[in-house]
Image (cartoon, rainbow, N blue to C red):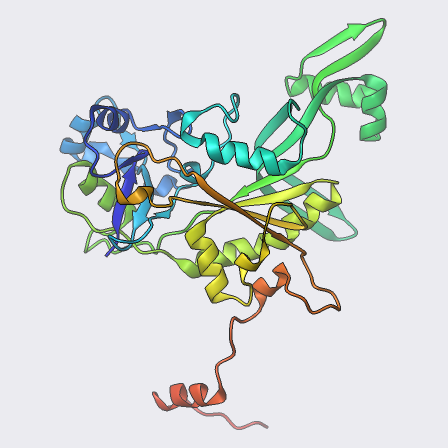
Length: 363
């Protein structure tokens, strides 16, 4: 069975004053803020009114998110990160300066292609909806980075293809800073340049078993209280399905906007994709971005001595074309192809393992 590897950022067996204080305050050291359960795991929140022992630990709270960062399926194997905040998080300020994710931030900014000193705006969880000719586009982007500058109303009208009166109402309502100079209005920190889409993909869990107390909330409760616990497994197929449904679309959109899309993954997920699809991600190891870009981070050997906050310091870039076209060379489209075709004898053996559930006659 799996075990929780990290709780609120610290290895589960770390009982240092710093680790205990962080847990009691339900803090996420990677965000530098209260843990939000990964942003979309509200069903994993624990009701403390139903557990006096937990309520005593988390004083002053009525609920607490299940602050599970990662799971270890085997004691000698690298943990699987299940919280996107633990894998990669872009703060509102100080990118590249925060200790806990400094390496990953700087590596991503390096591959973004922006010159040193470029001031970037960060838009998190940005939802874009667009319809044209009965075709519908609706996606939410984890992060969008874009250079910002002070532009005048005429420059903005040209970029937006709209009149200044309409644009002015929009920027005012959104809280942008504006100034008037020589009768012309300027907008500070206006997005100007090419965008970089950043998508963070972590592993999903299998759900667990309530009777065996292997769900995320139950394992969390037992681990916080220092009890023996077992956790859920990893839902490998769900991870792959979520990613493959967006990988090409979001990569194409980034290119259409004159920018790029960078997918942030953990190395164990890269290995799983390589073994379960026709795509061998590792053959695309490179130093330069392309149409599809995967930035992979790893614990390295640091998980073997689980003490204190572990910064992910091993990173690799895998990049290549979306499609091979007529060349039939490897491309990221291979992700939707079968890794290997079993011979027909394997099918027949499976059919012989059980009798038919019924029969029909073709009319």
